[in-house]
Length: 217
Image (cartoon, rainbow, N blue to C red; front, side, top):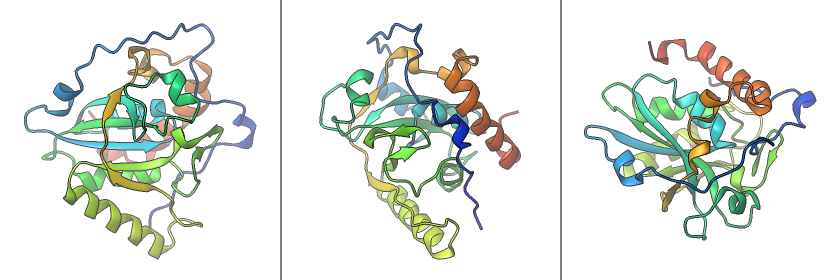
């Protein structure tokens, strides 16, 4: 039976996902989304599970994952900025596009990590991060991913793995927009930033402990 990783202590609820005070956000996106999504022999998964810094940090350490790109998906505004998405009015979710080798790691295994590294029973929130942009969502790339995600969700609810019903959205992949460059590899680049220290690091450490056999060498 899967056991969800617990939410952070209430003592940390003041920490939220936002650009650090000393950072001047730049609307620069030099990445080619199509290239990132079409690496030969690879497959792609797109998940939203709260702040994309957290999702990227976790999946970047997973064996078989070659690239994780933080971005936005599921909204109505074309090529939105972080500032726009943070208003919660664009409809976008903060997501991570995960490029992986299906010969090394399966979509099922990615889903297992997805379900256990956030709380899929809280609607439009993860800890102190509140808003539709932080919703739990699986944007599937094909019918097989859709069926697998829906089956997994139903089985988890049936098993009582979580104390409340899972509210994770499962929808076809809309247009994906890579986030601004300063968001990419955020945890690796800013390990001493407050949110990284108090929110991302504990999540990554729990992931490492729970999935030691799935970590990169």
